[in-house]
Amino acid sequence: MKRRKLRLGCLGALIGLAACTIDKDYSLQHPVEISKKWSTKNPYISRTVTDARRFAWWHQYHDPTLNQLIAEGLKTNNDIHIAMANIEAAEGELKRVELNWLPTLTANLGYSSFPYLGFPGVLAVVALPLYTVNIFNQIKSQQRSYYELKVTKSMRDGVKLTIIADITAAYFSHLSQSERLQLLRRVEDDLAKSLRIQQDMYRQGIASNIEVDTARARLRMIQGEETVVEKNLVLTQNALRYLINQNPHPFLFKRQFKQVNTHHMVVDSLPLSVLQHRPDVVAAVDELRALRSGIGVALSRFLPEINLGLARGDIATIPNGSTLGSPIHFNQAIASQPLVTLASLGEFENARGISKASYYRYVNTLRKALRDVDNDLAAHRYATERLDKTIEAQGDIRGAYHLNRDLYQQGLKSYLQLLEEKIKLDEINIVVNKHKIDQVLAMIHLYEDMAVGYDYDNKVPQKKSFTTKRQEMVYEKILPSILGPA
Image 1: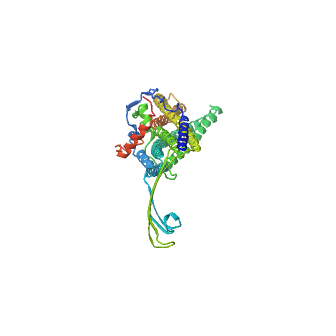
Image 2 (image 1 turned 90 degrees about the horizontal axis):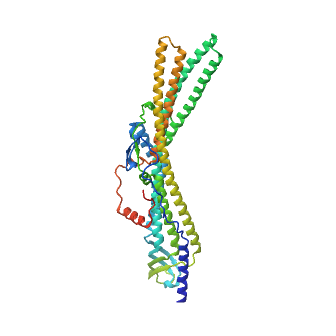
Image 3 (image 1 turned 180 degrees about the vertical axis):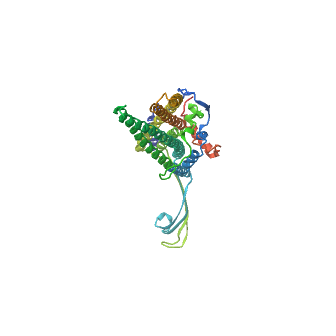
């Protein structure tokens, strides 16, 4: 009796020590507050959707080539295949943990000299079920595997989101660089004409060498910029080929960048909705839940383990014989309770520390998501305003060029002066091209950070099975709410 009391006392002391190591402040008592609206106002937003995951925003451009590239990328990109393989591995791990609830069944055939079996000799045990389980460990391990599977699925969604944004950005950048190269070559032609006129005037003695050197320098600067654009064309086409899992090869796109309407509808989503659907935030939440379940796995080392087993079979009827006949029949039921497991305290401290780090990673991911979307709203707004003002300036310069052309036709302006006005128009066209692609890229980043469109091919949400619903209901009751009130 005294020994039993001593054992119970030691067990209670160890469990109490483990409980005392739990940090009281680590209980999500102060959840992160989420504002109802974005702090940055964007007047170009014309629609708000509740589930932006299924809104295929790139369809607004009505570009079959872009649609085909995105569909091909989501099907063949290697990062997608890696993500799907990780999901398969996580599903296998969850299945392994779930099947731990079932006992193992083995069959043995051989020789035994164990005296308690009656007569040593040939042994045939046709049924040897064994069941060993730590119930609390099994529950927590299953929770952890379940949330780890959800993390891998969120990572796959994040890969899809990135592929859509990268393909769209590379496609429009390629169109933009193609148009920019044409505009630069037009400027080069005009500067070459201006240089020839300056050289003729210098030979005639009516112009200084300064004007000739200045015109030659301007021409060489444009030629140098053309080489940069040609390099960018190679980079963008190779980026597209890589994203659709193909080797480098030139593209021949029929669409021109000037035909792209960049003032399409901009979709907005409320902050809380973005956080609920953004893959990196969802993954951070599930990672935190998985690691908090890991604390329970560590604590389960202090709880008893149940071992059940039985054997049915036959042994030889004579010593060292080969004729089976004498039966084997025994059962086993053992409850094992660890008394001194000091190493498990270190395991618990490790699990608790990792879980704390995961919580702060979650908060950091949340803050980063809010920051990125707010920055993108501002970037899109000011990029659009700058583009609009540049287009207005383009119209003014075009009007001035037409007036100077009329004056030239009337003999009131020289051809050299008309060329200078033409070069100004060419240069503002290049600026419009630059500001337009900046505005397009700002819109792409906005859609990416708002997690728009990565689940567009799943128009109808898949119905969850009864088992999945039950798992989520049980797990959500066990763990506290992660997101605070809106």
